[in-house]
Length: 120
Image 1 (cartoon, rainbow, N blue to C red):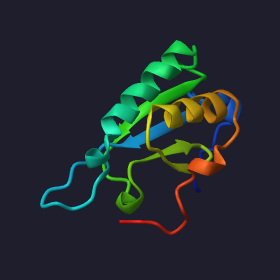
Image 2 (tube, helix red, strand yellow):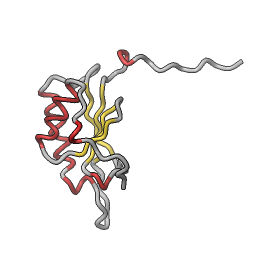
Image 3 (cartoon, rainbow, N blue to C red):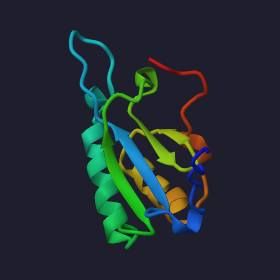
Image 4 (cartoon, helix red, strand yellow):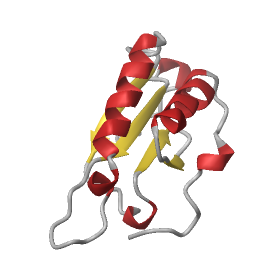
């Protein structure tokens, strides 16, 4: 007899509605990496903006640090799940736009999408 497979919970039952992961990886030897492009500043800004907007916590948004996401050439990068939307950002205004448009209102910020195929 086989055991029943676990089912995936409905989106409404997920602990967080969205996760945003920021690559904060630091590479040695001069290899390109997100940490060299002020990724920590982007993470810190997003975390504070999400909290200030009342978007943090269960059923809402979680802002996470990540190691290498293997898209270094496009860095700095962040990815929003469950949509799997990859962003490349430059400054605080880009982070603010991601928070307001995508994390708060569910609208992808097209101009900040990481180009398809850009990896390490």
